[in-house]
Length: 424
Image 1 (cartoon, rainbow, N blue to C red):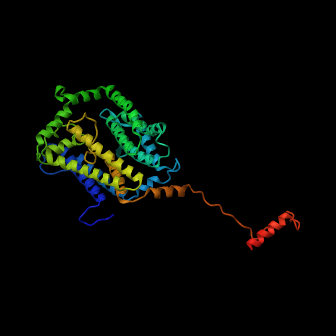
Image 2 (cartoon, rainbow, N blue to C red):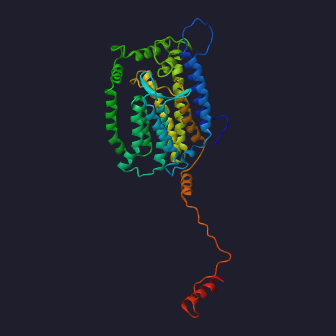
Image 3 (tube, rainbow, N blue to C red):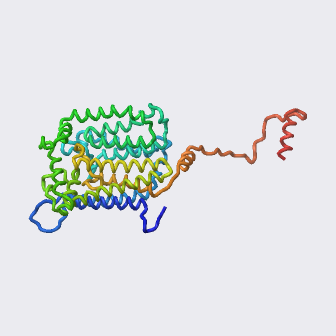
């Protein structure tokens, strides 16, 4: 429903939040990638210019997807081979499997997480995140099986577990994010609590094993407890804390940060929030958090106002994924949780991940724009399943029958005469 110019629509609030975060990301990536040189004046860095180009593509993607009715994901869902949701899930799973193949997946900093596709590099874990959201939104709304049974609940977890196992091999943080977001969607989708409580302890045990059997992951966990006791492993954390301490309330000013000059690792990706706090101070930190809260507000309004369960679950999944990732990244930068290797959505430097995230937020924009009802989805499914009526052809000059006519006075003749007189 459109309102006056004195009150923004929910999708307008979403667009403003997304555009503001993208602009903030361009400014901060450019600032974080600048180094001390002998040249006086402004000049784009290679990383800043590349991020600005990706951000421009992401904006176009956001508005294109936002103008498409989200109900297109439900077309052809009655048949397996024409189901777009299953195709998205299959492509994401195949990409996560393909990136693990030697000489196919691109290895950077000891981790094989990217697929080279010409001039761009695609991170399959980004596809896996949003494939899980779309799949669960469809599965929990359509309910092709009885989810009140424990066996059906286990069947629901099979594709989610497969994606997490493929992602966790090289990216534990993203796999944990997928698992947490999936658990929240299952709760919202009215899965029985006791079923989820049965599965959570084994999942936590597997997660602990994945952390403990990798030495560098275990060192990160212990360094988080007391970074100054092990300055080598806690170097990221110590430098992030220094960024917050030196930024103060107002910050040092845009471009005047010191930690980005080779002291703070991953200053344009995982720890870009620390650069924001150092240069823009507490004001910049609160502004960033407020923009993510704006996305969360639009998500809540979409969930509360939508009449169809698919739209509600899709909106919740998109909003939960973005805000959970932002919350974890900010918690890592503020040394509230161990380092996870997750970027700050829409702000950190990125390529394919930035575009895919904007496409997912475009789905949230579409949910806020278009209105559907549960009865409408049922009518569409029924119309697709209804068989076509048979066509009966009547001959104008039928061939003479060879069947002998009934004799006068017989029972058959009298019944035919009664039908003729009634119809005539």
